[in-house]
Length: 547
Image (cartoon, rainbow, N blue to C red; front, side):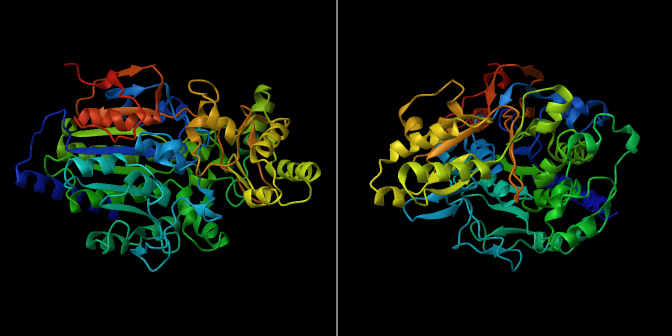
């Protein structure tokens, strides 16, 4: 009832404001609002798989009325949401934008560095430390930064997400606001990196305590369980479920929250997180007057696809299907609200993802007899350490290993007067012997060789000389890393969806290969502006209006 009232009130406010200002038409080649809908961990198969279950006004509206890039990829070695989001919104690779992983070793200061942490920033919207975040370690400009620059700061740029990394890297350096969920309070918060004072409208939104409402309910299937014919039973998928033990509907979210320590993090792995974000966005649009003049504004919404629990349920689970059936309704409401207020010809939409998902290795092996397996990084690194001790003498040779990057102890290597390249090569040679590892490449090899266009191109795309590890690893197709005491969010699938809809977009499909780096230059081409100088992607010319 509350959501219905809010939506009706906001729609009336938006229509009234637009009519009062007299802004009723604008060239289709210059949209007044760009809306980026990003769905985390989205496999392109989901659209076809659930097509007959979707309504007519959500995913179907975008795909039937828009332009589909059906062979779209994100060609990074490390398929992390942080890396992918930075790539998508800068239009370039990690080798240039610098976000090579969630964390890396800062060689100059000899310490581990978080890609977002910024102790010079503080939280706006709560008393927690969740706002000590910024885009300061992002080395290039984003789409939003470019809009700000070419409009002399007049363009309005906002992002809304459940996770801080998604909100910040989609917003960039100079956005007017980037909002994400504070797991300790359930509020939407931001950072002093973007604003000093929390907006009144956002404070009023937080007073509704919607996070408590959603997490205080049960999650049951939207439709009758028997109708989820596109999914597979939990036992067949090796699903560990919530907290490693709950994998059947209904889910008591209050209980899950209590057992997980009392934080609101569990909300992110439910479809209600997407409802929460949509509600917040419907408040933000009229209150911040996005699209109210002829200067293009940018809004990014990042929906969650089971978030961190995706690996515990998988792409064939009933939970995933239910999440997408509900997300379809949220997208439908968002499209209806914006198109009614502005007119389809005045808004440019794009829907994509920054990472895909993989099917469970054991399921592929048992069901389809595919050559897959589980790789144990901890055991492999333990063996590596023993080997290096035998070859180079006792020492703490491995400083860090995680997310396909291994850092050697440079101080120890220098102290022992060992040639760094020799140890990198020996380490890579040793790791290449393991079943499950397709390639282990030494940093000096990646620096000196040219892998562009080949199967090793992702290594160069992901390598930054100041931040990347001494060894970068790619696992065999179908293999999944699994650690004993820590869940590993990994996929070897680089294919993600991309569909364009709205202003100046014709209906159609292309099977030409496109890349995540192509989105920024394509948006810029549709706006008639030059993309950031660091952009390496290409304009997807097939969607441009014919001259």
